[in-house]
Length: 457
Image (tube, rainbow, N blue to C red; front, side):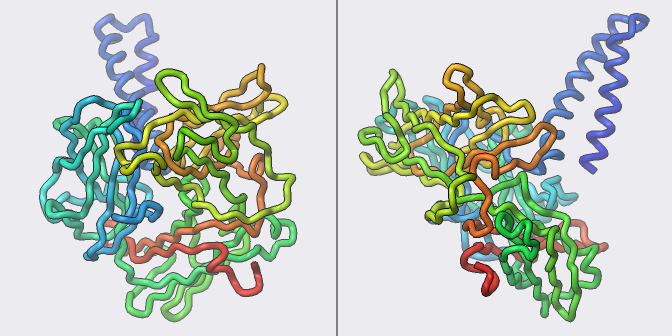
């Protein structure tokens, strides 16, 4: 439905543009066409991002450090059980001196993050929108901000259905212009997912790729047409650009669906994430060349980084791209952690003409956009990027995105090793012909070290 809408908008855009450039069209017609063209252009721009990236994340420029996770577990994924007792915590900073009347609403989506054909009352018990009433002002920081926190489900709303959801935050009366949009998942746990992460059997790919096989067991859940009714999405760490979403069961046995491909379920092994410690402005940690103060902010200048592909693989513990907000000299990192500039440098002999370089991970919300795209400096002969980050401990990598592609390449700067440690999330959706929404009937998080097939790692 969404793709069809975009195609229709594109056709209208072409027609309107022809009217704008046609000398035989009256001035009034041109003015009307101009207004409509701008509206259609905006729709194409906004919707097109969702279609190409299949990624619902949106953040306004004045909103920073958006985190969504299970309550009390900062490094967890925003996944809860239907009719369970767990809550999710959404937090964010607004670069403002005064608080705002922020509201939130929740929308049910399908597996492609398009709005489901459901009434709000079908998936939510309660009324929306509701106010975000928990906020605090930053204390003794150079960058002033207001820190907002919301725990949900709560007394105002309870979720009635499983599936994909987004939470939208906006100022009162501005629901059409959210300042942030974030995804989360609600699972029914109707099936069991047995993962097996292993080296691929292909000798040419064995040293660089990881094969994610898995079996879905459904002894108490009837599935009549697995090829049509079941959809599976496999995600590596927090990345959106390389997820696999077109797998069908290779074998269908009694109450068992087996996904045991040899190529269709391969992921680049990549490498362990680099890390950056911004918790103290007094002492420069490893990987930081210097800490300096240029009124009004502190600046962390990292040592020039090196590509790691030519180095042998070395295991080091990481957060698989996530980050934790923390500050050494203060008590409450939520409101006492300051914002500092982190300056990244990646020496390269000449700029690439076939694509761009990005600093990726949770620090960029796993996005590939202008905010985290590096620029080439001909004087320093290097790619450079400065990010304004809240004090904490961060993981990151350098990825290369070829022109015209949506999947980034990890090997160019990070190397590619089959024995790397990665997290894999497997989502299983179900929608029978008679259903009007996709149910999320199972989720599994596996690790390439803990859930590897025997004898493969």
